[in-house]
Length: 135
Image 1 (tube, rainbow, N blue to C red):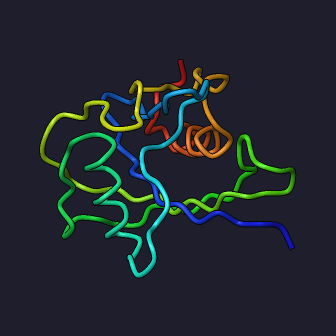
Image 2 (cartoon, rainbow, N blue to C red; image 1 turned 90 degrees about the vertical axis):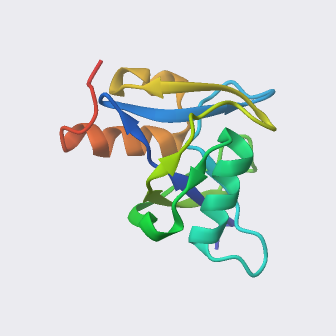
Image 3 (tube, rainbow, N blue to C red; image 1 turned 135 degrees about the vertical axis):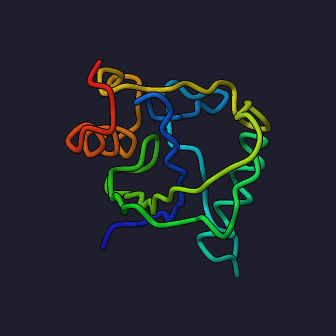
C-alpha cells in the first residue's frame, strides 16, 4: 500500500486563472493549502493554512468541498501519493506571499509545465468545464 499524504487546498479563480503558490526552494507551483494538524478538520486546516501562506481570511461559513485529487507526490519517494481535498471559500484581504511562500501566480491551462501533478489535474478539470482560460 502506498504512503498517502493528506492535504487541503483552496481553489481561487480570478478572471479565468487559478491562484497557485511557489514555496521557497521549489520550482513548481502548488495549490495554496497544506496538511491538517492533529485534531483539525479539513476546513479548519484550510482556514489556518491560507492565513499563514497568503495573509487572507477565509470565511469558514463558505468553505465548500469542490473535488478530491490523488496524484504522485513531488520530491517524495516513488509510490508516495498526495490526496488533496480542494475547497472553494469566500475571503477578505488580498493574497500576498507570506511565510514559506516565495511567489504567487494566476495560472491558465497553458501553465501545465510550471505546476505540480495535483495542480495540473485541477487545471485540466477546470479547463474541461470552461472555468479556466486555456492559454
